[in-house]
Image (cartoon, rainbow, N blue to C red):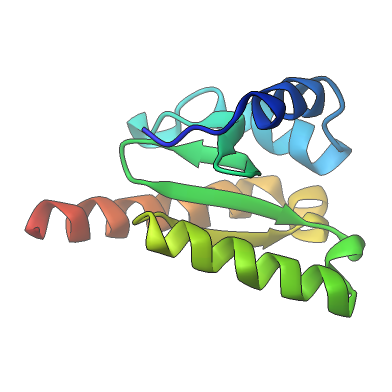
Length: 124
């Protein structure tokens, strides 16, 4: 299991209390373990905090709002994804707008990604 230093753990706890509206909405569905896939919210991973994480599949789910459109944030997201890949963790990014407009479609897509990831991992 991937964890982080004490400061990252503290930040993750704070972020759990201060989740954005799209994160809260998505969490309402992910906490029900769709198709048996268990997710954690605001999970520490090295110096980063993942919005949602499925440990069994080593899959991070990031909800990207308008703040992820800036050049600096895109570069940080790229570095985060590279670090996660180096740890064997795949990342899927979901636009916050998609969560707000059709959360059921997002859950359907996520469970599809999870099934593919589970099949790929079982081949190893």
